[in-house]
Amino acid sequence: MPVVKTTKINEKSTYAIWEVTEGLEELKSLANQIPHLQLPDEDVSNEIKQIEWIAGRLLLAALTKDRGYEYLGIYKDEYGKPHLKGNECHISLSHSYPYVVAIIHEDKAVGIDVEQPKEKLLRIAHKFLSEEEQDRCGEDTSLLCTYWCAKEALYKLYGKKKLIFKENLVVDHLPNQGNNLLFGRVIVNGTTNEYQLQVEKISNSLIVFTK
Image (tube, rainbow, N blue to C red; front, side):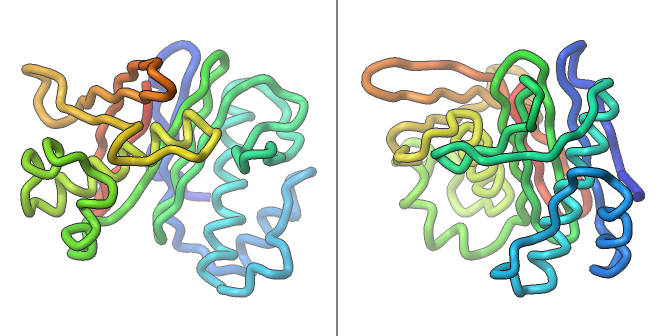
């Protein structure tokens, strides 16, 4: 299992990136060696989706073990947010073939997302960015992708759905911090929670995660 990068963010949190080069049958073989690791449901028929599913859970299992815990599988709550079985650590997972990324934190909710900059973002920017954010990003697909990933990471951290990306999720660059750190806010019912996000680039993909 060739994990490209595992990074200890702090004493409580670690994230990992995996460039998946294995085929479906090899991944199934790896999965069968790990107790409690679920295989895709029968309704997941697309081979790439199956590969992403299995690789994501293999990566979460590896991160859980790295933090010194036994992996007992995952379950999703009423909002569809994933949690570790028998473990209070918080997790988040994302995939955009061939990359799979995951993050684990022992104390607080986290979010992570990976995507590739695409022209499609220019057409849908008005759906997920405020007017101010649109002006800031312009037609820069890399920056649009960064903001999209950041908002997806915040959305996953919040974990309760029913958020309007252009209204409830706000993203900005931290002053004098370059392009690798972002400042994010989740605004719900008049309450604002603030978060710092880290931006990483690998090949032609962007990764954003909460710190």
